[in-house]
Amino acid sequence: MELIQDYEQQYAVQTAEITAQIGRIAVSSGAERNKLISDIDRQLEESQELLEQIGLEIRDIPQASRAAYTSRLNCYQAEWKRLQQDFTSAKVARTKVGYDSSVDDFDEIGIQEDQKRRLLDNTERLERTSNYLNDAYRISVETEQIGTQVLSDLSQQRETIQRSRGRVSDG
Image (cartoon, rainbow, N blue to C red; front, side, top):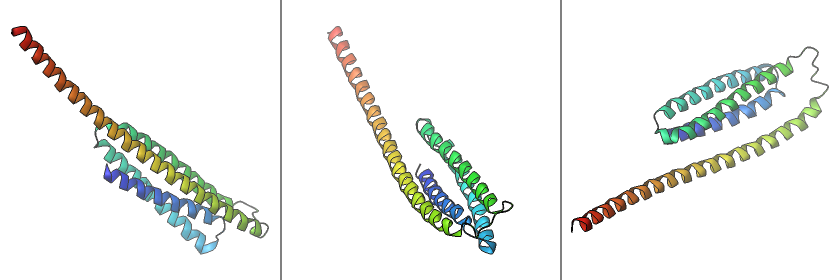
């Protein structure tokens, strides 16, 4: 499960980088824009491979933990699809027929700063949520362990009572 968490952290870092690069596509042009697009393509492929690795690792964990990890993987896959759509939209936005970048260059600077602020806010929110989910998962595992121990203790006590009852009946 530690390996899955490592993959999840790598995925989170990678998607944050992809999101930041998608935001930069709108204000870049020429060779810089082409380099960004190829970098994002590569990173999207790598992040998809990470998701596939997570899926493979989930198959190897105990059934009790599998549902929680599968749910998280589904969320990551939905996020990946959204990133891919955002990337496609960003590529198309600059190539629209009749687009004149000189008209809104000054507005884009403000939009870019707003996008950076929102990206940072969303990244912080994502990190807090991830920490919250990790804590909740840890607590659920601890609770499961305590429950298992309680059931084991109760089983032992039941056996002791049944043996005592048998001795009283025999004596």
